[in-house]
Length: 88
Image 1 (cartoon, rainbow, N blue to C red):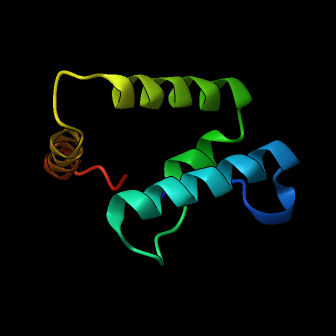
Image 2 (image 1 turned 180 degrees about the vertical axis):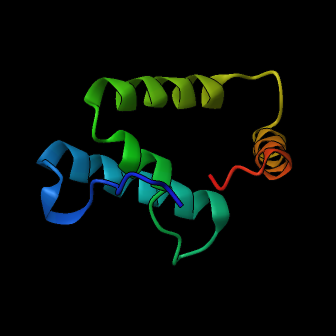
């Protein structure tokens, strides 16, 4: 649980709502869960546009890298976050 409340709902500008919609669709496609929500780090980082764009560029670069299979990369991220105790 984050100490900073995420930027959601009516507080979010139009461009951010579109980004949230795209992210929800991507998470649902990745997990296969139709009830999957929005990643919490994204809503917290949305308070600072430059930080959110840097996070997006990092995620895009990670997704485009071809050195490992995509599912194996996701499994490694999950294992790393579990080992470090990161809730995200």
